Amino acid sequence: MKQHLVERELTSEGPRTRDGVAPRRRSVTVNLAESPLTWLHARGHLDDRLFAAGECLRADYERAQLGPSVTMRWEAVRIRGTNGNGLAPGERQFAARQRFDGAIAAAGKGLEDILWRVVCACETVSSAEKALEWPARSGKLLLRIALERVADFYRIG
Image (tube, one colour):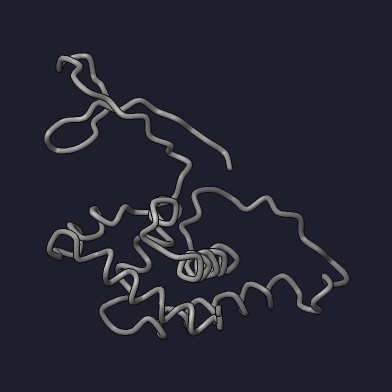
């Protein structure tokens, strides 16, 4: 796994980048390349099944190209042939979109927000809780419920 380590100052509000104004007290090293889902799994908050479900959802999100596009796409355009599974690139993208939509629907009303924010948008659980105006420490529980349903959708045993 690629690492991008950054030193952050700890304040009463949480980690903060040093700007040279405030005196340095305590600091923590943060890996910016680590997703919130990986962080939760590495610290035992998610079991392997829930982590795999989240990774499947994120993979379908990426394959369906649902994220914002900042620039022109430079992928090579295939004129003839298909890959081994018999689908053209557009068909693979459409199939991934259908799987993604099905998994989000399987999570259930009210849980798709936390699921999308943490798994696809890579927001931290606490950031998602604040954005959704949920009580502190409620996001992890609801994320686990959503991931259980997604794991059932993807048939991850």
